[in-house]
Structures are given as structure tokens and as C-alpha cells.
Figure 1 (cartoon, rainbow over the protein chains, first blue to last red):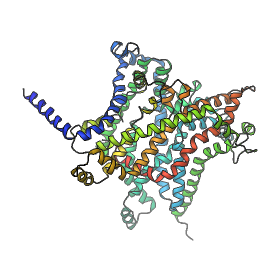
Figure 2 (figure 1 turned 180 degrees about the vertical axis):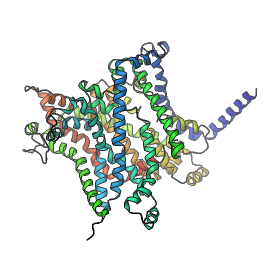
Figure 3 (figure 1 turned 120 degrees about the vertical axis):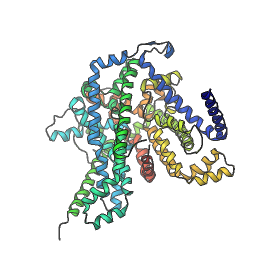
Figure 4 (figure 1 turned 120 degrees about the horizontal axis):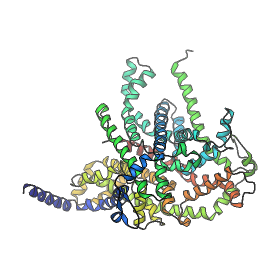
Length: 310
Length: 291
């Protein structure tokens, strides 16, 4: 009885609210529709991971198989391979690429000549704007058997053959080209954090006799630590996501051993082999782990550093 | 003169920055000079290039601009860009503005609904089936609609609107202005810089996108520029791998135009961004404040 009354109350309040803010709600309707149709409908579509989905019969008519696809995936030969590759690529990116924009921003910040600084910055952004198709094809050309990177490495005794046909070179190529493409762009955020540091802190540090190095250690780094943590959290939330675009453009069957990752496997299973349910199950496994990681790390970060994403 | 530690550091720092500039720019420079080089000498050349291999030629560019496939791809990309960008800007502004209005009961629900998509998504297959169900396969709308809003951009826009003093919209409300009028006459004009950032971010991602087209489109007449380019360059790289001397006409053409094609598709954006630089630096900053 009491509950019903509360519900009624809520509906009346909602009705009043909808009338009062009708003008605002009307504006947001297309946005809500977009999210419902293009984000939430596919989220609902994830349930085909628990079915033997057939497009003809649709979600309503397809047979339920429970966790069968997950089981099949965990037991398959590919499970360890793509999980391992995904983690290796992702962790190498984290270890080698993540610190680069920070280091670059700190060094660039020490350049006193504004014009030179601006020039370096402008050029460093350039690769970010180049499409993945172009970047990957440049990599392919430059690392082909006649490419200039292959010839340069030839000086150090690396045999002059196409580097992308050898499994052992895939991860370095992936990571280094990523550093080339994203360091400058990634540094913007740290540069702006650096310019936000109160100059008086430096003055105070100088009076206390701190040299440049000490100032960097005790003023600059703490000044950008929050930005670093936020960026790190965002990165960790994607630890299981190795973008399929770049890998798909770079890999070939000869190097699947090191190059095939979860997302490319999902693509091949789903859209080449048309195993919709199985592919969706693999992707769901991936998304859930990502989601758990970001929630856990966000909680830890909030506890220890009082910085979080939400 | 005393050798000051910081001076030594500064010297090496400048040197390092010069190396960074060189390493960043050289691959791009290489493509540009290769595009003007004589194809026969280029195909046997190995190692670095400092200047175009003689005889200097622009024939590759002529071939690019004569190629029907490439021109069609360019037209498709422009179509998707123009309609897509308009949709991007309208929807992003509407959503961002709603999130700054104080009062509506459903605001928290809608905010959560928007933010949640940053951390979880249906994934490739359910999205593909969704497009298929809506009968958008083989239509350019399959490229335009699903990317009508990028949530991070919406958040950037929201922060820009939030930075506008509330008193402005409040007094406009008292004067009887509708929410739509406030958005159009106050919010958007006062956040021109952020709108420029939106044009750049959405524009670049639309210009550069190819993957959606590769799964949603079958009809090659609809392919956007990047997908046309991927197919041509794939062919080029496969040819480079094979050692056949009797390569057919298409293969030769592809070898000839690959560098020029990259230059033509990339130059518009690279020519544009330095002018928008001061805006997008601001955009990244706002976006970083909080997700």
C-alpha cells in the first residue's frame, strides 16, 4: 500500500518534471534515440553469445546454449595464443609507449626558445592525423625487403628480408610505430598540465636552494601526477583492447603466431567464418574483463591517490 | 667560463628535440619525395632518400587524378563527411547542452546512459547485426549514423558549455527564451573554439575511417577514399612480395601511384591542422579535466 503510494508520487513528480522541462527533453530526444539504437540495442544483442544464433530465426527464435561458446573458446587452441598476444602487445605498449609523452612533455617544457618549441610541437602532432591505412602501408613499404628501415637495420646485420613476415618483429614494429604516431599528440595533455603549475612554487623551491632537477622532482612531477594517473587509468581500462584496425592492416597469416589478438580473432570468426554467437562470446569475455579491470583500478586509485574517473 | 650542468643539459635537450623532429618528419618526407621520383629508379633503390630520384615527375599525380575509383572514393568520402559532420555537430551540441541544464529529474539517468557507453559496448557482431536488421548494409548511412556521436567529444563540448556563466542562460530564461534559443544564440556562439575542435576531431575521424565501410559495404561504387586506398595499396604490397617479372598493367599502375595516392589523401588534413592547433590544444585540455 505504502509502496504504491510512493510509486504514484514518483509518477506525478515525473509528469510535472516532464512538463516543466519539456523544452529541454525535446532537445535530448534525438541523442537518447541515438544511444538506444546504436549503443544499447547492440548491447542487448550480446545475448546471442548464449545462443546458437541464426539470423533467419532471430534472437527470439534461436536456441539457447548457455555457456557452451565460452567453454569452447577456453578449451580451444586459440585461447592461450590470442590471450597471450593481446597481453604482450598491450603490456609492451603500456611499458614503452605510455611514458613517452610524459618524458617528451617534460623535455619540451625545458626548451626556452618559444618559436623552436612551437615548431617541435607542431611537427610532433603530424603523425596523429595520418590515417591508419596510410601509417600501416608506410610501415609495410619501409619494412619490405627493399624498404629503407630494412636497409638501415641491414647495417646492423639484420637480414634484409621483409620484416613483417617474421613473427619476432611484429610486436616491436607495432609498438615503435605507435610511439612514432602518438607521442606528440599524447604530450599535449601533459604540456597543458605543466603550464598550469603555479609559478610561485618554483620561486619558493629556488629560495629553498632546489636546483632544476630537484624542482622537477618536487614541483613539476607532483604537479602533473593527477593527469598521469587519469591517463593511466584510462589506459588500463583498455588493457585487453588491442585495436583491430592496426593489427588487421599489418598482419598476415605467416605471423598469426605473434600478431593475432582477441579483436582480430573476433573479426575473423564473426565476419569471415560467420560464427556470430561464438565471436560475440569471445568479445563479451574481453569486454567483461576490461570492465572489471577499470572498476577495480578506479577503486584502488581513489583509495590511494584520491583521483578517479568517476 | 664555468660549465653549468643545466647548460649541458639544455644543449643535449635541443639536440634530442632536433632528432625527434627528424625521426617524426622523415617517413612523411620520404613518401613525398618518392611520389615525385622516377618509378623505375625508385623500384631498384634501397636505403634513404634525400631528394626525388631523377627524372623528376608528376605523372603519378596525373594518374591518381584520372583514376575513376579514386575519384568516386573521394566523392563518397565528401558526402559522408558533409552530412556526417552536420549530424555530429547537431547531436553533440544537443546532448552536451542537456547535460548542463539544472533541474530535469531524468538528467542523471541520461548522463549515466551516455557515460556508460564509454566503458562497455556490444562489440563488432551485435553492431553489425544491428545495421543489418535496419537494412542499412550497402548504404552510406551505415557509415554516417552509427558514428553520429562520439561520447568523449560530447563530454568535451559539455565542459565548454559549463564554462559559460550560468547567469547568462538564467536571465535569458527569465526573458522567455526557450532552451533551443539559448543553445543557438548563447551557448554555441560563446564556444566557437570548442566547435572548431569538434569539426577537427569528427572531421579527421570521418576522413580517415575505413573499417566500418569494409564490413558494411559490398558495392565498391560506395567505397570511401580510405577503403579504395587500402585496396590499391594492398595490391601494391602483394606485388612487391612477388617476384614475377611479367606483372600485369594494374600492378605497374599501382606501383607507380602508391606514394602519390598517400600524399593526395593525407595532404588536406596535414595542411589544415597547424591553423587549428591553438584550438585543439584547448580541446584536449578540456577533455582531460574529467571523463
